[in-house]
Structures are given as structure tokens and as C-alpha cells.
Image (cartoon, rainbow, N blue to C red; front, top):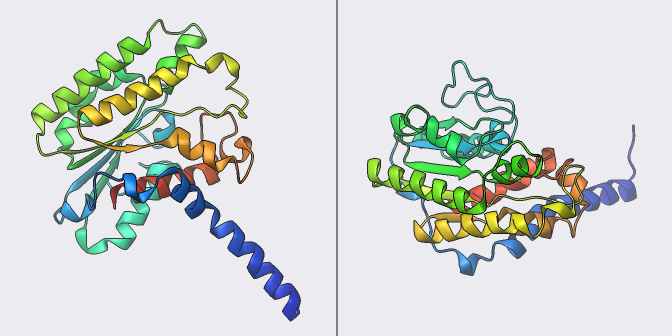
Length: 254
């Protein structure tokens, strides 16, 4: 189909507006002046290990038999895959080994139950954790009787063990988030869920970790498109939401 000059420039302009949305969102939600950890990736050596951990948001439908490093099947289709693929492409000479060991439905105590095999044995140099939504969601639907205090205490014990066993590890703590425009998230989530977010930030400060403010990021994203554009149920990201999360993760660690 032929495209005249006016239509061509209209198409380009529209595309450009879409392309700059994510950088605008991240600039507003993650001001560069607030970044405490700079150049974490540049401190890594060739062949170092990066590990993504968490629940279904990280799991994203990955296979759990082989669980190989740098394998598309072992990463699923979420933000961890997008972020990992970017690193392997843009930092190819570093030859990182990147793993995804997120498991759908996990709460903090379930991370702890598999931590030796799914974290410590891999000896990651960077460990990224996104956990907390199920610690609250499963309580809300009657499947769990945990509290925000239990979440924080369990999480602290896990991080303390990790630092003891791997003292040089670089930690990335991701803020749990919930978007009210989604089908599973309503006013019943708040303000109690905010306590889980606050605990994640508190622990990130306590362990001198990189912190990724995903709730703030998704709140900012809704100024550009409705919440359902970023996550259908308010918890599990869409393609756009996963891309936004991956770009935020990369911005935080670079």
C-alpha cells in the first residue's frame, strides 16, 4: 500500500509518542537523583550469575524441569525474560549466566523452603526478589493467615541468611504492587496492602539494597494509559506492563 508523505509523518509521530511513554514514566517515578547504587552491573565479572526470584509475576509460565540459565523456556514471558534478554544482548562480552526461579503462588516462607537449591547453590552475584502480593492476596481470600509482621520477619530472615552465606551479593528488592483498575484488585486491598510495600522498602534500606518502586511506577503509568492496559487483573502485568517493569529494572541496576 502506498503511503503519502503526510500519512508517513503522521504515523512516525504517533509511534514516537508511544515510544517515549516508558522513559517519561520512569523519569517521573525513578528520579536519577534518588539513585543510591550506581553501576552495579559494571562491578560484575565475566561469567557472573544474576538470579530473578519471586512469585507468578516473575515465574511468567516458565518451565521448571531443566531451569537452565539464559534459556527462553526457563524464563517464561515476563519482565525477567525481557530484562535478562536485554542484558545478554547489550553486554554479550560479559557472558552472564541469568536464571529465573520464580514460582507462581509463592509467599516469603515458601521462598525460604527452597532457598538452598533455588538461590544459594546458584551463588548469584546479583539477586533480584519480587515477593509480597500473595502474602496479602492469599490472606484476603482466606487461603493464608499471615500478617504484614510475618511477611517482614520472614523476609528479613531470608535476607540475613543470604547475606551470611553470600556476603558479596548485590540485592535488588522489588516493591510489591497492586493496580486498582484490575479485575482482582479493589478497595479491600487498601490501606492494608500498603504495609507490605512499606516493609519491602524498609528491608531494602536495612540491607542497603537497590529498591525498585513498582507501585509508584504503575501509578505514574496510569497517567498515560488505564490500569488494565498495564495489568489485566491488577497483579499480573500485560505485555506493556512487563516491558515497563523490565525497563525499570534495567534503569535501577545500570
